[in-house]
Length: 276
Image (tube, rainbow, N blue to C red; front, side, top):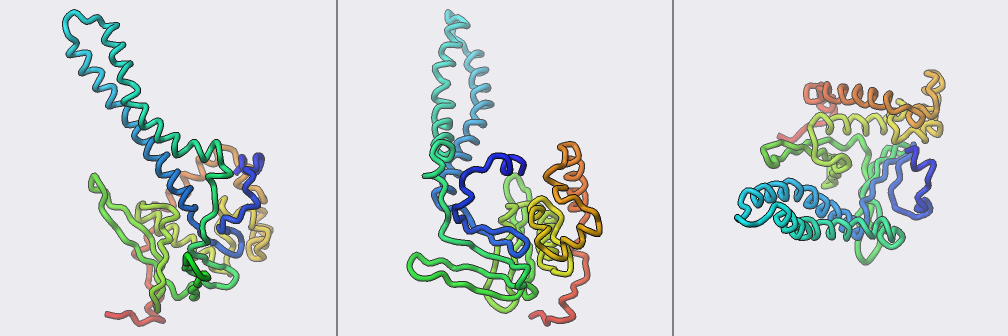
C-alpha cells in the first residue's frame, strides 16, 4: 500500500472493471493474456526452483561414479556443461511469462471483457454479469439476503482437504465462486471470508476494519461516525510499523482459527422452508 501511494504504476486511468470501495465489491478477473503470462511465468519459476535439488542429487551421483583417470576438475567441467539443460529451459519459460509484464507492461496488461460479479452495500443487491462475444452483457440481480453460503471440499495430494466458498441464490441458478478470492484453502478462512462480506453488506455496521477499505472509511456515514467516536486514526493501517503489523496479523489469524461457524444457530430456518 505504501508503494502504491508513493509510486503510481501508470495504470490508474485504465478501466479494469474491478471496483472495491465503500459502496461495492465488484470482482473482475485479469484478461486472458495476463492470466496466460502469469501461468507460464509461475510454471517456469516452479520448475526452475525444483531443478536445484535435482541437479544437486545428479551431481552427487556423477561424482560418485567418476571414471578412473578423470580429475575432479574435469568432472566439474562436465557438470557445468549440464547446467543449461537443467536450468536453461525453465529459466526461459519463466522469463517468457514474466518478461513481457515487466518490460512491456502497456502491451501485456490489458483489462478483461468486464466484471464477473458484484455485491453492493448501498443497494443491497448482488449482480452476476454474463458476457457474450457478440451482443450486450446480461446482468442477473437478487438481494443479498436471498443468498446462502456453501462450502465445498476436495482432496489434493498428499491427502490434504481444501475448501472453496460459494454464494448460491436460493431461488435461481445464480452461483458465485466467491472463495476464488482467497483460493482453495481451509474451512476456517472461508468462514472468515463469509463473515467479512456479511459485515460489509450490513449497513448498520461500519465497514470491516481491514486495509482493503481503509481509504474509503470516511465516505461511509456509519463508518465515519464509528471512527469518530472511537478516535480511530484515518491511516491506522497504512502508517502502521512492520512489527505491529505482524502482531495484528497473528491476532487476526487467531480469531479466524477460533471461528465456530458450523455450530451457530441457523436463523434462516425461522423464515425459509428448506426442501427435504
